[in-house]
Amino acid sequence: TMSSDNSIYHSPAGAQAVMALYDNALAHWPIPFETRQIPTRYGETFVLTCGNPAGAPLVLLHGAGTNSAIWAGDVAEYGRQHRVYAIDLLGEPGKSAPNRPAWDSPAYGDWLAEVLAALDLVQVTLLGISQGGWTALQLAVSRPGRVARLVLLCPGGIVPDRLSFVLRAVPLSLLGSWGTRRLVRLLYGDQPVPEGVEEILVVVTRSFKARMGVLPLFSDAELQQLTMPTLLLAGTKDALRDSARIAARLAQHLPQLTVTLLPGAGHALVDPAGEVLDFLAATAEVVTGCFYQPPGSAWLAA
Image (cartoon, rainbow, N blue to C red):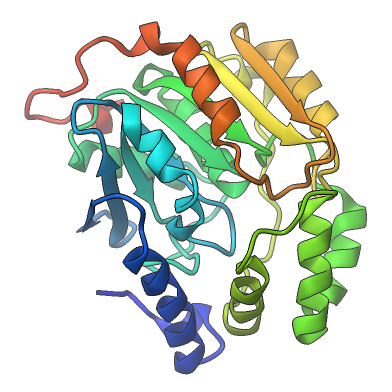
């Protein structure tokens, strides 16, 4: 069921090792789920759907170098009140196509709109972490009417990444499993590293060709499109991005911004569900409208 084009992996065995870890996570998924592959002009896209069938739709977008397995610890909580759609990003070590469209193009907003149209979702709450936050923003700035609420966990595209992190991370990634373990420590700030994370990152770092390049920054004019209720959730010890600077820039442009900076938390947030659910409960009245559109997709016209 996998588009395992080996070009984004160092070897077919590496691709199989990463997929085995993913399949193991799915085998232990905490609530019932279904999956589907959605054809898009950018390639097949894997979507895992679970949670409350009557709930408002909540779309989860993982970060770089991972896949939707990262939501396993939080998805049962999200699924109580929401219909959850976890989407694997293109070109990352998940079950979507290995295609990597240019970042400095409308491709990612167009791709996500196409996926949501296929799911018959007219308006959604988007939750994205890091590169997934950047992807959520691509949709929200280009089609703000489609996004009821926006939850950004340490998102890309708001301030430049810290050069100090890149200078540390790249050498560490070349140092095998020891370097990966050091990198994990760097990502988690002062917080304990969840069980199993190191092992997964060792396999992914060894097997997967991370995408190079820098996520483009959004313009002030783009950020001014974000009039929907928005939560920024980030750690004060984020080694990759300056959380306070992200908060300050968003606060200049977003009229309905909630900022929660977690003391001691790194770039990889441990168990963010509590803060996210508080925000979703506080903003629930904005999503009581009709979620299902008639046939004929308004998404793609936008």
